[in-house]
Length: 288
Image 1 (cartoon, one colour):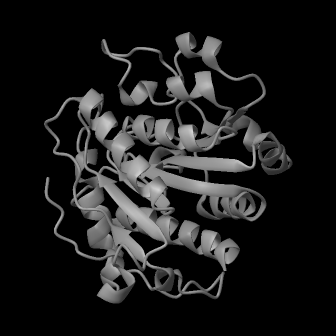
Image 2: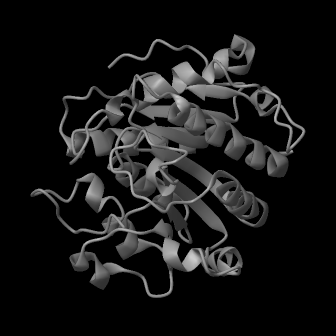
Image 3: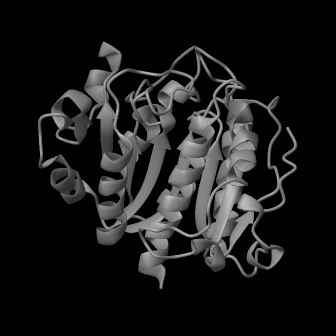
């Protein structure tokens, strides 16, 4: 799938070249492992299309983070390659931009895209921890005959790094044995616990990669995703927590996955764009 958008949000080209950009955005239009609704391979295109309508001034941070530069990486895959090859390509691309000292971000695609990027980050940051925000644990060792399924996206991670999981409200009993004790913040507990943000921050190491599945949000504000689950996070609760993470930790990159565009509902596309720009704005505060 070719992506025809040359700059994020239509920003001037002088803020979108690789040499002048602190941030790179890697679109990964891939959904081969999707097991319910397919279509998240169209997520990057819908995301970039919706980005044209975002205001580039962020009120909360009093900043225009696009001036730090956002370079969109040309398409690195096509949707017909094997998942194993896709993961290797994402790994290679991540390594490439880590070498260039860029802040690396991703838009998916299904959650299997995270496997390759986290492998690369883990090689550079030996004390890396992963902040995984999702309705599902994604801890199956194998699903549908492969370890490279979106339902397995955090299994390899859990064997190598501290994995802090936020917003969980759906899992298979098989996955219970792979949970990291004390590192799972279930939605039904978050709802009753005012200290969950502080506790989650305490469990993260200094270097953090954030992986956000759109279905961590409640479907009332983000219905366009492959496996929606009722009872998710609200917008401002999510931002409050993530702002704390960026303030207190060294966030080295993030991804947003499982956006599944719906031609009759574009608000989720825009939510993903707004979330992306917010996270860059939070990073910008600490980069200045």
